[in-house]
Length: 215
Ligand code: AMP
Image (tube, rainbow, N blue to C red; front, side):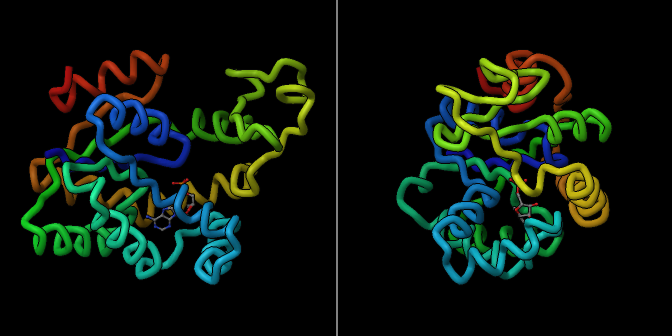
């Protein structure tokens, strides 16, 4: 049984690396960003409320995400472990997670901190585009679509509202103010594993697996 957490600034590659780790360990990936985007797309009350914060680059209120995560990790497929991607993002969220797990006699095994400098993050996120129909993610510089302003089969390319530069800077400021304190919090508990997120995807995956003793 393995319960893991990924923390790191937006655009550090948490989603991609968490996905690779989940396939390796055969456990579900629990991404609060994905869950909130799904709620927004479905037009639920929760989705509409979350959207006000997300499109401004702000964190969604703790009680909203805590409720989502609590329900998700109680599902049968999470019984053998899970990887949390994008949660917790505040000390209050971490404390609530700790008590939720404790009441199920569970605990966190490792907290991965994926480190990438701010300027590289801004370049990575602002160049990101999503294919309107395929949902495929491209990067104008690092993973360009077949033709410069069109994706597969000539689909339109869209930019997520929260990927615009002003919003990215806001998200980085939120990270520094609210999420970075978690680094010391988990280091004090002896759970923090630092992984350099700069470099080729496969190299980062290799460092990640090494850091948490997976091979
Ligand atoms: P992400 O895809 O993880 O970068 O999340 C996108 C947006 O969803 C964030 O900028 C926040 O507005 C919101 N969000 C995701 N996870 C959390 C969380 N744990 N706490 C608060 N807001 C979150």
